Figure 1 (cartoon, rainbow, N blue to C red):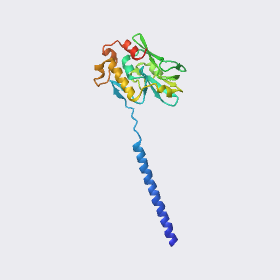
Figure 2 (cartoon, one colour):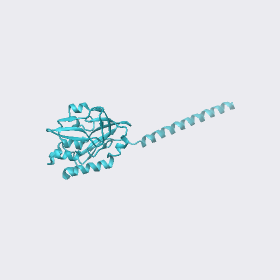
Figure 3 (tube, rainbow, N blue to C red):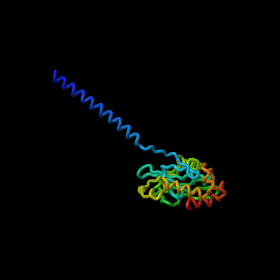
Figure 4 (cartoon, rainbow, N blue to C red):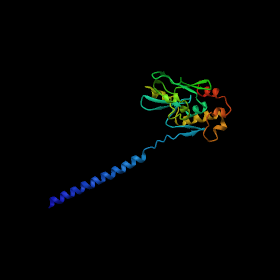
Length: 214
């Protein structure tokens, strides 16, 4: 009888211990979940232009997104897209081409005139967006998603990304670019219109060459 009581006591203690472990597990699980940062990539509107915070930006108004330790997706930012206004043709480097950071890689044609964009990253072109070449307006209307330009195998992307802007630096840079283009226009708080250089009374070709570092 005595041994039976001891066995029952041991069983009860084990059950209580298991209950405490479960309570501790769920409490810790909730704590970890609450502390996990919510990563929102909703673009901020800076000087009238959307600026996704998950991207890094080159001063020539192109962006880079790291998709793996060696693969980077590249495109142009909304400032570039709306400065160009309308794209008649888009030429991108062939797959396998070596591109250098800060050097011309994409040629855009509008009204018979051409301008170039510079690459934000260095490496070998892994893929190009054939859909954007077939319909250049895709690149202008959806610059951050379906309008991407190319992906690059960049073994030194960590070094390359140190030369790009993000966070507060990117926001200040975009504000300054908008202010230089047209102070009053940049401060109205609204989203910039397409072909905003012409709307601001400026020569779009000259402005594009200045801001795209041609």
